[in-house]
Amino acid sequence: MWEAIKWLAHNGAKNLDLGKTSLANDGLRRFKLNLGALEKKIDYVKYDLRQNRFVTETDGVSGWHNAVFRAMPVFMSRVAGGLLYRHWA
Image (cartoon, rainbow, N blue to C red; front, side, top):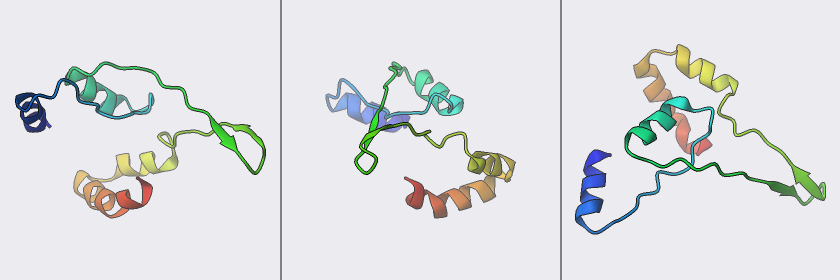
């Protein structure tokens, strides 16, 4: 990430958007803040056309899968993440 930031700065970039992160994801938020990120809260709404109303959803960060990945050894978590990430992203 540091090499990408240096390359972007050298090539004239003034800003780098590090993307959205759930408030529940403390580790990723700390990582981005340590890079100098500015945190802004974004509120989302969803309109369900079938129900003809606004609905709320959780962002999925605090689901059962987090407990499973935390319990795995790091190498297993990386393998599983590599196999599964494309289906969740």
